[in-house]
Length: 322
Ligand SMILES: C[S@@+](CC[C@H](N)C(=O)[O-])C[C@H]1O[C@@H](n2cnc3c(N)ncnc32)[C@H](O)[C@@H]1O
Image (cartoon, rainbow, N blue to C red):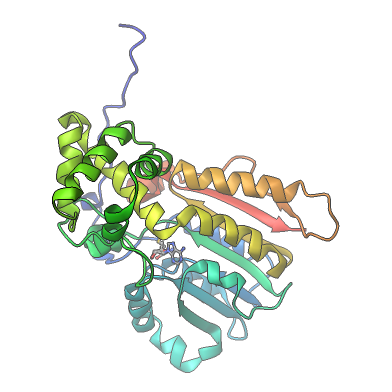
């Protein structure tokens, strides 16, 4: 009895608790000051990258600090995020066009884009999905809305519907376990494969119903979140592009330039931690290395979490090019 785990009785803060969030159609930027102070140590000129534009929360504050001779390149794979920010930043885009470049593309393309080596002062990645993508039921990312099973951030690549129509059972089990840490992965994978023989899974609710059949009702909401997360990660290749981007961007950073990454689940945070560690321990003079500035990740304050529930799981890691 005494060994039973104690759960905090305090109800988690919700978006509905905060009028600032209800008005904010998009993502209220998480750990804004911490991110900007870490990112812009080489000053308010130069070239910066925001790899995850979203609603432009971090981008707008980087722009506010950046002088007009500086440049910010902001990526998002989601055309809605780009359209929203074209509108939001239209004055800057018209009056000082060299100050902001909005690119609808996967952020991994920053390592292929024509950006010279040793030229970037800082890169920010605020990973995952925006509030808008979750709360407006866009792209089939949330199990709360009945929409097409898409889950892609952008218009390219295989949808979740296509993935579920072709994937083998073993591979699906691996996706649900590996990317969702889902304890009922085996039974859910088997049931999906059985069910698709009768008819393809086309909507988020087709998938939701199967998960709910496989899991005890009191555990269903956690399984729904984990399975949807796992499929989204697989569809977008999220972990692969994260690792490739960290490795590929280091040569493009200036000496002293920063890479600042905020993640929201342990799989992403583990990748950031391990790739940083590996790059920081490289002995080869030919390969530029980094200093890690956060042995432990920075987390949001209680006060920020109360104001913005999405900050609850955020972990911020920072490294600097040597
Ligand atoms: C957490 S939100 C960013 C919110 C933003 N920092 C703000 O303050 O408004 C993450 C955004 O990154 C985008 N995204 C995630 N992974 C991406 C990738 N690999 N390439 C491009 N965009 C990506 C998503 O579409 C989403 O809009």
